[in-house]
Length: 352
Image (cartoon, rainbow, N blue to C red):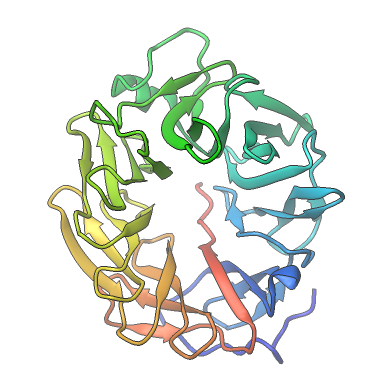
């Protein structure tokens, strides 16, 4: 694998920043390619096919990446090892497949597959090399992410049954007709869905929920919602039910849990430009991490130890990858090249 140094120049971040960050790089969308950055040395390795690659997602053991990429007739899920080896497109039933997420044991990948608004949740078993539709064939579902069944049962969010596996999916259900669509958050099993109690009845017809992200231990779920009028970050937990944790008149979105589950990073327009913030859900304390009056900052991702946030910023003109400590005091640029760098994802540490 050839290291790219001529077009991607690393700017030293900090002696304490380490690990590898996957990200998208390219001049235009058609040539976007998944690349891998060594945060300590600055070495950048292209590992995706460069066929309009989508945002990379790490397996929990840190050994592989999954992302969507162009495939014959549509989009497919591409899987590649962290060293760029053994890259392959999965075999799909549907032409269009998007937003892959790994199971906790790194043996399965969930994603949405279908055509147009007719989307379903697909689970691909890597050992058996086959797809299975979850939630039933008649339900429109997108944006799946895995969580623990035991935690949802303990929180009384789904009923306990004998045939539930150790993991279930959280996904977004599409309801209504085109032009009058709404969304709801559901737990999804192989044969059915369970709507989660995120709404305060009666819910408005244009009620929209999105970007559901389970707590690292499965004890809560963060998500976006327009409950209250504008876009806010909510958390659904067994103790408090659904509550607003960002609570600002400006739009807030894209919640990301810290590895220990104590904080949420998110994006907001609350200071005029798009910025990265973090909130402590227990006290609703909000702190800025990457905010500027003359540039935008977005797409945060936590380091495995939770001490750093990588993000995208256009403060030098082009979108580039930056890193900051969680207090926002030490901000450094990681990439610097004429194209665009997007969608950073920090490699998790394999558990012993």
